Structures are given as structure tokens and as C-alpha cells.
Image 1 (cartoon, rainbow over the protein chains, first blue to last red):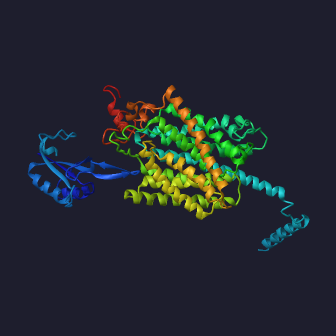
Image 2 (cartoon, each protein chain N blue to C red):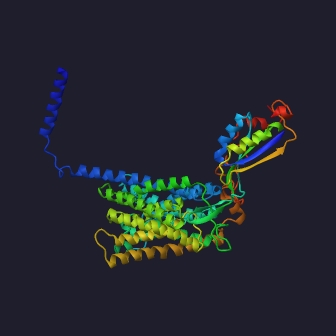
Length: 112
Length: 469
């Protein structure tokens, strides 16, 4: 099992969700997060005083899938979240040791 | 059909009979009835206007909370609620008598305390007039809560708000407005023009704000050691905007209501009030756009209020074109003033000193310059004298008051309490328990996850210890 963590632009969430649904991923968790990378932040103005906003709003998607699906999922996210402009985000792939479906007690790949 | 014709003829006949019996009524013969209608209309207009001005308390509350952080929202609501509540009692007991009682000296009134001018069965005009005046007193008092937001001890603020409604506001008011009832002040005898209170109400609140913020000092984290200004963002600009709309509406009672009479004058006062606000918002927006590269919302909202404050004094004595010029200049002044006070490190989170103090002074001066009946050096001189008298009375007395509070019970909360937020420390709660509120830099408080409030019943059931049903 692998977990794919993707940090994307907030307005791309629907596109990414649809792309994942299309390849058979039918569960995911999202978080509203803030952060920065190469995009850095931007300047805002409040009552005449400028200030630097370092942490830009992003959406983080967590998907856990069978290891065989990883490449497909990563490709789907990378394609659907891409705008070609700075700040499109990142994708991380992690190994997952165990999964449990709380309702039934199923474990392993049957639980995801 | 026949029936209708018969009854129609009957009505026509009887009406004609009545007409024939009475003498033709004239304006003179009906004078008593006409005067009574006028009197009733005066009561209705004065009290409707009082209700509009009362609603401005809601406007102030929204503006102030919108421009400050969520962790102090309850505190702002409580300050706005209590300066009206306690101020009403103070104005009933002492303030009204000082302001409108019989004045032998021209410096303050000495009768009419505890609304003693009203006796059951007597003329109730004093009640209508008191109601209209108490909402004005509360307006002056509540201006200060915004300037001193986010760091003032609640009990210290309560003491201040009683004293301003008890003494500071009424004494200056008696100089300029005492003659509206039984009093008579030295300023009005000189011909000072302040129709609805640019100086009497707004500058009084503005200069008291200035004294308070100087003694308090800035909020933690606003001014850095290296000289930079770090803005502390308001938590809800839509609420601040709603507050400005409410204030704009309330001003249609504040200015036209100051006729305390239902007459045709209210039309031009309405128009002038609206045009000055419009010009103030427009020019403040343009000034901010040119200066910062963006049409800053906070400055534009302040601009509308600046125009309203400025036109409050001259609203009945200038032409609509003059009103536009007065409001437009106020819109520019307010942006410059906000930047100026930031530069000299006087931290006013909502811009109250700039809007009410500075633009109140400008409006009072403009009443002399743009006077519809012509102007002269003497008129302008009296206006300047009134502006100076207001500052020289309010600033020292408010400064002394805040200083006294500071050295006795304390005016400012501790730095720990300020960082934690006044809602939790002073009032034992959070304004938005179901929201997680976080700031980069850890200045915010988190939502009320520690309580069961807002949870579903089934969640509460699940938390019951095993063995209970």
C-alpha cells in the first residue's frame, strides 16, 4: 500500500477529484493547508501598510491505494493539477504499513 | 342599483348640510388643530431620528469588531453595549442637566438633573428631547472604544464611559448647544455653527480617543524596533463594511433629526449628508489607489465616515455642491491622518482619531468657510475658537481621567492577557467557538474545542462513562 500526498492549488481540487474518480480511486481525504515553496508568498496591503504573506493557501489531498496503482494516480494528479505556472504544488509518495476499516475491522488492502 | 343611488344622494345631502352649517374653516380658525398636528409631527420625527441614531451603536460595534481580531470580538461587543447602557444612566442622572439645564455662567447647566423637568401630566417634550440627546451622548462615548480596542482593561473602560457621559461630553455640549433647551453657552452666543455635532459629538470622541491611545500605548506587535509598521489585520472586513452602511443610514437620523422639528429643512440636510459621504468614500478610495496602488477597503470605509463626520456641522447651512467639496476634502484628509498617526506611533486600530477628531475639526471649520449666508473672518474665527476650545477641554480632562484610571486600577491588560485575547481573559469565552482561528505567528486563540457546546447529542452520549445509560 502507498499513500500519495498531493499539495495543489485550491481551485484545482475538483479537477483532481474527477481525474482520480475516473481511474477508480473512490476515497480521499483533503485538508486546507498553508505553505510556501519556490513560489514564496506575496505582498498584501492593509490600511496603507504593506505586509508579506509567506504562507499561501493550498489544498492537501491524501489518497491511499494499492501499490500497483501508484503510477497511475500520480500521473492523474500531476496532469489534472497542472497549470504550468509557479505554485502548482508537489506530490509525495509514502509507504503505508497497515490500514484498518473501523466499522468492520478489515485490515490491509481490503480496508482501503 | 337604486339602493346605491339613494344612499349616494343621502351622503351627498348630509355632507352638504354639515358644510352649510359650519363656517368655512380657514388656516386661522383651525390654527390650534394645525399647530397640534405640527407638534405631533415634531415628536414623531425627533423620536424616529433618535431610533436611527441609536442604531449607529450597532454600526460602531460592527466597524470596530471588523477592524480588530476575532479574539477580542466579545470585548468590543460588551464595550459598545455598556457604553450605551451605562452612559444612558449617567446622562439621565447628571449629563443632561449639565448640558441643557439653566446656565447662569454659560459654562454648564445647573438644573434638570434626574430628568426632574418632567412631571407626570406635564409637557412631555423634555422626554423626546432627552431621548434624542442621549443617543448623541452615547455616540461620543462609543467612538473611543474602537481607538482603544484590543488592549484596554474592561473595568477601566467602563469607568471612562461613565465619566464622559457624566461630565466631559455634557460640559462642552452646554457651551455650544445649551440653548436648544433651557441652557445657553458662551460659544453659541458668539455664533458658533455646529448644527449636528462635528465638534460637539465627534471631535469630543476623537480627542478623548487620542488621550486614551497615548496613555495606553500601541498594541503588542504593531510597531517593530527597526521602525517598520506591522499591520494587525482586522478579522472581518464584510462586518466592518456592514457597520459603515449602518452608520451611513443612522446619519440620516443624526443630521436631519437635529432639526428636532418636522419641517422642510430636512430635505437639504438629507441630501448634503448623503453627498458628503459619497464624496468622502470616493476621494478616500482614489487617494489610497494612487498612494498604495490598490483601492484599499479599510481606507474607503473610513472615507465614507470621514465625509459624514465632516458634513455633520455644516449640513444645514451649505449648498449640496459645498457638501461634496467638504466630503471630498475629508476623504483625502482621513487617509493622510491615518498614515500620520501610524508614523508617530499612535495605534488606532479603526482610525477613530482621524475620522472623528480630525475630520470633525475640518467639518466645523468648513461650516464657516462654506456658509450659505456668506462668510467672514469673524465667522471663521469663531469656528476655529470652538475647535480649539473642544480640544483644550476634552484632551486634558480625558488625559487626566485615563491617567487616574491607569495609576489606580490599571488601564491596560498584561502582555500575556493581550496575547491570549480579551474575550477569554476578561469575559471567559470565545466569540466563535465553532471556528478554528489561527494566525501565522501564534497571535490568535483557537476555537472552543474544549467544551461540549455545539456537539451533537449522540456525541455527548458516547462520552458518557461506561455503565450509565
